[in-house]
Amino acid sequence: MRRLLLTLLILSLNGEPGLAQQVPVEEHRLANGLRLLMVPRKGDPNIAAGWIARVGSVNERPGITGLAHLFEHMMYKGTHVIGTADIRENLKVIEEMDRIKAEIRSEERRLIERERLGEISDTKDPRHRSTKHHELLGELDRLTKREAELTIKNDGDRIYTAAGASGNNAGTSEDFTVYFINVPANKLELWFWMESDRLFNPVFREFYAERDVVHEERRMRTDSTPTGKFEELFNAMFWEASPYSWPVLGWPSDLEGITREEALSFFAMYYAPNNISACLVGDFEPARAIELAEKYFGRLPRGSRDPEPVRTREMKQLAEKRMIAYAETHPEVVIRYHTVADGHRDEPALSLLADLLNGRTGRLYKSIVLQQGIANEATAQVDGRKYEGFFEIRGVAKPGHTPEEVEQGIYRELEKLKTEPVGDRELQKVKNQNAAGDFRRLQSNFRLMLELLIRESNRGWRTINSDPPLTQAVTADDIRRVVQSYFSAENRAVGTYYTKTATAAEEDPVLAGLDDEEKQQVRQPAGGKP
Image (cartoon, rainbow, N blue to C red; front, side, top):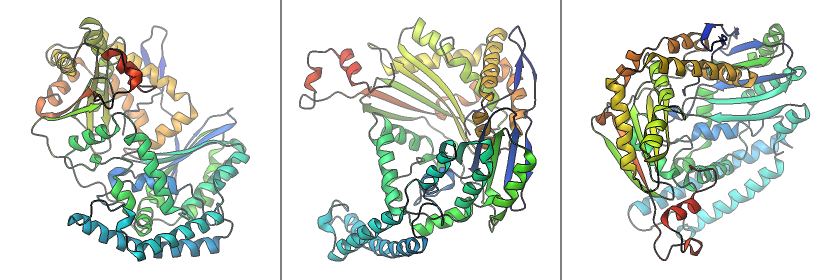
């Protein structure tokens, strides 16, 4: 889990953190295993409502990567009563599509084998398809159009919007999938019915068509960005054994091959109530919420067994790894170290270390940006996930300087931290900033709801109260110890980006007459690094 240390800290007038107050969470557990977390807050007409399934890309395997994210899409395709003009006809069409798709997969396997033997060069080339293959694709296209005729698009959104709800959305990470919305306080029962219905009576409409939507999402997020493919490559290089090595969006070949049978098996395991938690934050009566939870979520059958934790653990890295890439971006260096999972005793110190390095008053900016003048930007982040973790530092080279200079400048700052203790004043400053930022974020019902769900999906929601004191207790010796323990050459991977230089034939005429720095400014995409 990423570092989301929401706390409820009261700040005294002199800026020092005072006594931490406990976040008042009421918990109710249903007989089927589903947990409901409740934080009543009077006066707000809306309720931040959400639920989380303890499943992400880390729970996949080679062959079905991307399935957790695909399921996020499929959960918005409706149920037996939402999203269809004729459920009986709809189900018949889906069954026929599955039969046709199974035959198409047989044809596709033949093409893959021919490509493997060198008989063809592209399995996607229509010229290599058999007559039967073309006929099957035509039949699938006909059924797809019929399915579209029977489908009422965005029916669930329409129902929610008509009731005054907003922000209906979801997100998939490596470790969890979360669904959330803001609903008017007087429409709480609608939320319970809607969300339980899509868990109780889901219909995965447009299953095969939706994979194309995910492909387009991948193209926009990864393939069409200057460094997207390289970042994916770097991540796969960094993790040797861990399932964190594949992207949340999945590998393209897996997305193309996932079957509905595999999807249904995945759903039965990970979307059972014993693997789900729900949360409400806002103006409601807990007794009424429990009554509704029992009525609607209580009808969900418990899974036949609890999902197993991830078995494969990352191997200890024995040698430095390096990637060199040429892309339409500023020269940059990325340094990533293997560290610890969320909840490890060293994580609070690593989190404060990132705070010491970050920001305009942080060590990296002061050193390699202001003093040495070799970088335009430098950032650090700690990423403690459910099973593994890492610490990453990025630095963008200033024109006239190289990524190698930035890399060495970063190492010099890390070496200082290994030998020179952080001063009390500097350490207390980042602790205060950490507490103040967390306090501000906690004021939002929505942010608190998400934080509780994410914590509950991993080590439990109570860590929202138990983690903050651990951060405040970090010492200068703890900072020095974690830098010495994890920041070694054999424990890191380094990615170096150089600006891709176009050939004379590729050069854009708009860039003619500009020097290298001016050309890079023009090439830089909107919203990119300065």
